[in-house]
Length: 435
Image 1 (cartoon, rainbow, N blue to C red):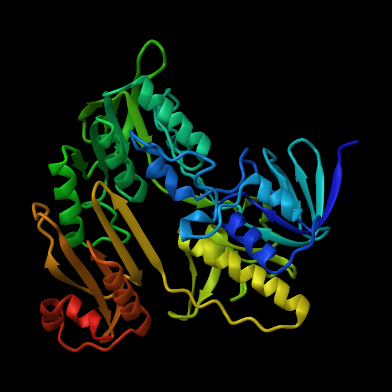
Image 2 (cartoon, rainbow, N blue to C red; image 1 turned 60 degrees about the vertical axis):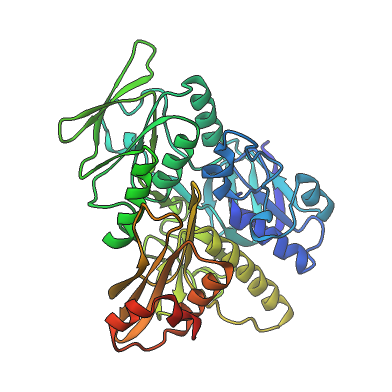
């Protein structure tokens, strides 16, 4: 007979949200044996952003246990021993293949069953793969993706095997920009290809992208825009050797890294909970349409109070905060204490080479560039305001100080009125400093 275990609380998923939820449960006084984390990964929850940054450094690279949650937000590092001390069961290398919310039962690939009273769905996203679209040759060796630590280890091994070789990065978003920089720092000859007219179009304006594309080019990265990978050739060993582009060009490659987005992992719950915006619909406490079932992080489609509409946010900051909110709400329900509604301010950031940016708010309406976005500038400092219906809704800043980033966050939260866009562009950061 396959085993059956019962827990008061089960967190399904072992990423950032799971680690932060476990910490909040401990803060709230969870009793030994009440809580389990079920994860298909083989390690305790860790800070995923490290994988595209410190994990790939040529010297002093980040390695576990150095970046277990919750170090990314300046919190305690939760080693496997911490979970054991708290009586929180870490059920690792365990893939759940069936979830029956009506009977509160989860079934693993090995046939084990887990029952619960309260479930937190923290399954995150899966990487979109070129093989999903039947791209010719996409199953060749060294065509890599980056989502978890196993992926990162494969990438590190390929970088060592193909030292100082040619790397092609497919995709011009977050992962594409961060991995292109990491490969360049590791002395690879790097090309970056994407179909859009500029990089990171979901957030960047043409004016913002002008700086990053120029900066990356100055670092020796070959940017190929307006086309995409339509096929791959491999050598006799089955290793990728050529990336064929839709426009007829071809690029030699020893390694290909693909970053073309992710999909929230909600398949286990199809037809059992209400869905919205590609995620699981929740309230302001992250409870789904099924009582006692919560969804946090990438999979949650929640009411964003600031903009009075449902949103789904794929970012580490929201993964951490939604986890804490859900656990506070669960424990609040038990004790009869009221918990404030989730009131999230969207926040994104990135670091590569020796540049770094932050963004707060909503990138809608008219954009107003301020500062100097010349990629050749010795120490670039520039930004963009987004203005809609006479109010500033979003702010982006490259090269800011901690105080300046705090100031732009305040602007995005306060949504101050602005009448003259030209004057706003001239005033630049001074406008934010006054709020």
